[in-house]
Length: 272
Image (cartoon, rainbow, N blue to C red; front, side):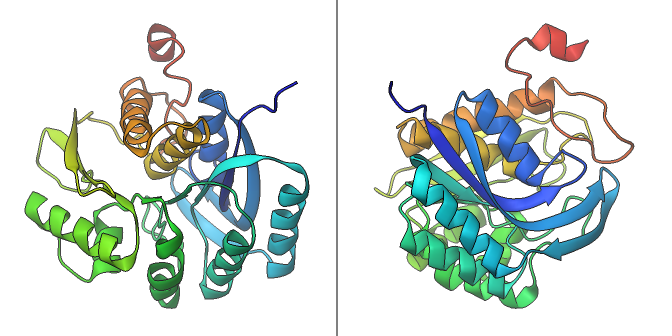
């Protein structure tokens, strides 16, 4: 019997279930891909914010990578919350050691409520050591600013930032424009390895239930890459999937609520 398609999330745990590894698992499952994990950190959080975080010992991170490599046939992987310099370098070491297919880097730095999820000194390590391994990186505007050192005030700046990220070594770049305020649409800029580029635009939804959008997008892209889809197809599918999870929202918690990861199954039921 042929092996079922498998993908890997390398990330932190969100006890509230809306972001991090939990969002990755739900998304990859919904895309009909078997999800595996390397847990890097644990957070105590809910829709109101992050109360505490604990980075796992590097030994157990190494052992998780080894265990997966010994048994599973992983076709694509992604990174999320990596906590600090030591954990970033541990992940980089293992990604160089094992071939887990195309790598999507979601350079998670700050939680929706404002809590830091990556130490300041780790930003340069992500930039110089992790990003050059990436098939695609999916930063939001604040993350793109941190990684490139430029202030992004408009769409022209997004294009400049994407080109700078390619110069760092990222093959394909998707800069998410959701942090721009005042517009009735949200536009993301995509720059592909061959130099072609395009914009993906969706109408904004008036909601605070957007916790885990970055994790969900990158996880969907990873699942599609695991299936053998092109980078462009994976990005377009990811954008559509996230739009559906926001548009057909659910009410969970009292703050920045999670997405509806099963929205694509039945939109009418999701609204109920």
